[in-house]
Image (cartoon, rainbow, N blue to C red; front, side, top):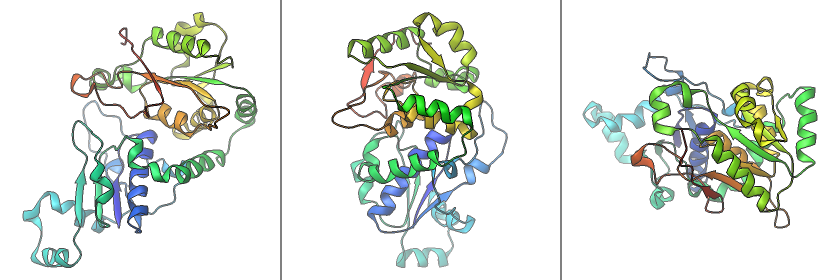
Length: 309
């Protein structure tokens, strides 16, 4: 059995699930999901609680029981294990694997045993590359099967019929929670202007759709770029899934430093005849010790943003 601890919003949960599914597939064993951190409502300073959202993207794997979670997590405190637990572990050993800080790709991940508990964010395509086709199919079909209202369905048809560009602007907790802002930062208006210009110079001529959790700010600060279509926040859907679905129908992207935007760009269809172009911030994190860390494939164009807020 592989158990993965779920933390953060939908984008983070998708990374954690992808890593867990990859290891469970490699080891021909069952994947279970630990919801306990998401359900913990202990008051925390500067923290935004999140809900379990993977059911919205086609995930059906069961949750781990409290007893199963305890068995794996007790390895963090070996002195708490009883002699019967230690004896059982001799015949069926289990492993607790925590991602390092700062995070770094670990090639040995694929060699972890078939009874492993995973804790971390695992934001690197290499953790789940061999499951890419399955993940794209599962996530996209999950998004597509959600109930979308008539306005969203009409917009989906328009986006898919053209070589559309998605601009994603993440604000919310990245702006309003001080430590989160200090750690992540947000790309500047200049970054989006230069990213869009780079796509135009590369011959991309489709319409531009702006997705954000703060459309009023986007209208005020981005309208000078001209010709933008601002997608209403009211079309966001549960956990933003309608926005994620609409973004994934676009062909090209200028994304924020957000796992939500990452998944939209990654899920977008690509063929040899119609390659997608993705612009991403060169500095994914603002924190100095994470400046060299990012989750993006090498084919995505990194754009410096010295004016980042």
